[in-house]
Length: 354
Ligand code: 2P0
Image (cartoon, rainbow, N blue to C red; front, side, top):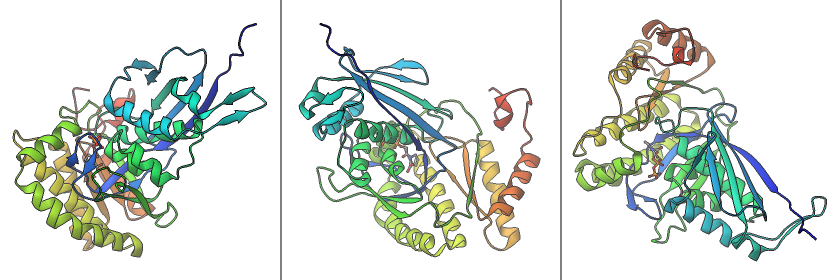
């Protein structure tokens, strides 16, 4: 009679991460190998995150994927690299209750259906690809019963999107650039877990939810090709900051942490400006937020809040504790009053066109 039709399914949720020492520039575009180490903090999984369900069934006749409910193409080389790496490590799966028995060689022919949701604006410089690719790799690894640990999985996620490798861990994470040409040692390690420094509060001001104009991938390619500053940054500046940042995290030294995070964000944007043609990710509102935080920190005599901006105008602010976070929110609402109270737009500051 009819062969048994079954579906095997795994759902995972992965938070995004925010770099405090930035990744910008690759030495290998295909394997996604960076020109410097980077350090990030992974957000609370209840907030900015991707939820992904991966499934396989003998009744699926092709690989398909939906992002926020809309079908997207899986032809891209990066997705295919991740899938190839995962399939190569797939193991036997057996679930007697559901009548599922998959031999590892079967994975080469079983097709996948993948549904992924971001609960935040995609590609607006809020590291959506980081959470997305990390979640995809993690859920596929569970579906196919991989034996690899999170660090080894991070080296696979890296090939989907560089910053994704840092979302395989919570807390503070370092992406070690590695030395090997094949990328085997370019992976994420956890520096401290999420409980280590839990007084910190992260506040994100969505300055604009529009998609960014220059993708990170092409932006960093242009930077490596045209900026004279990027080599100085990668070789001289970042290695020292990585050591200092690890130390600041270990000691929960907020003044050092804030100084390093702010100056590294500023240097990343300086390197973007040094790219030809220049890349502008921050806008006037971003600059006003920096001034506001700098003025406050100076008035207090010691940093209360750190800021960092990625490939977009949105501000990520890290307050030293809950009390400071409450004061920060007050200041932001006073200086950047919401422009509409009708819908989600009220969370978007400074961009009248939205
Ligand atoms: C970071 N960003 O360290 C830096 C800071 C943006 C600014 O990683 O080409 O999406 O997929 O490796 O990871 C954004 O770049 O780029 C990024 P690809 P990715 O978070």
